[in-house]
Length: 488
Image (cartoon, rainbow, N blue to C red; front, top):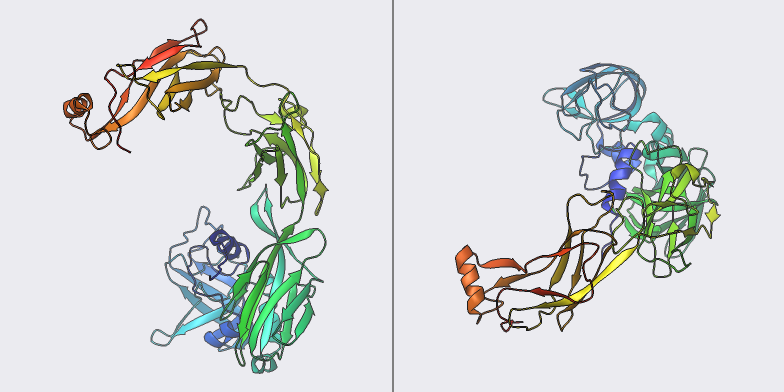
């Protein structure tokens, strides 16, 4: 089965690695050699003036702030500082079309441009699916271009190893390129090795055309988040990539790595028993995150959780972070090690690569519950099996931060047991959907459907009022029609 990079990884890469705009749907990512061959002009340039000014856009072509329009046409005046192909040093004008894919520029940006030329209009533009990018993110390309013309006469496998983190301040964002990373490039008969340079780039020239697997050994404290291929073919194989190197061609892969940091523990109830299915979040201790940030796990049957890929920083661990307490989960939000108030929680400091264990959260108390038991039946006393019982909380209950509604399903004898938060007032009733196809020989149900002019209908029992003095052990809920044989 063909393997692909998860869609979210591609979107993050496109935004973070300054390759193409996030709205672009590029069929492949080009290698530096392919991009050079396809472009009419290749040069490093400084943006001197733009009309209009796309203020607020970063070098990746990110979201536009006030004063810029990502979809508007733009004219960009570029001072060519170093020319590699098709242009001369001096000035060049780019006419960027009004679509999401074509990048827009800001004054002062310095880019590596792979430009297209339109012969009829004699105009230059930069398409979105080239390798055009901010100069600080073009190290792989600049090595290839700096080696011309010799680099164009040999096969080449290359890429960049970069660290990105899911930062509370900036969301998924670039940290640095990783020098000294060992890279293995395995062919059918031989494994070649390379090491990333100070800019995180690895490259190897002169390999025979064929099938290769690229794999990196991240430095201590880091783990591969996802690999991203470029060139003719790239299939992920776990943390490795399998590539086809064509005669005289180039290919490769970039690798995104993140902190290999974890914190783990268990969530325990007041008696020390494990609590399954309780979600645990890691949140910044300084306050709400400024960008998209979510590190979460939900406890297993033994109450265990593990939070992964945590950027360095100070955090709080919170159990049951956003859901209201309910009868099925009668717990409020609790912070590690087991406190209700945020300002009493223990701050957890994460260093890159840290492995913190036994961070158990003991929930010191849970909300008391009441058990309601009874039978759901038809008017002739026949039990109603496998249908829903609902408790609907009345308005005016204390503490609106508690979810007091609850539900359960009857057993084969129509019996039910349903938990509610102790002291809750409301109504208890049974409900089921009926239709002629479900009850083909039931006259009473047919009359109900005809009266409502419906092919199917949800019917309910008369509700029973529940309060603190209700007998909760022998409740009878009755549908107002006799039992009929249900068609399976």
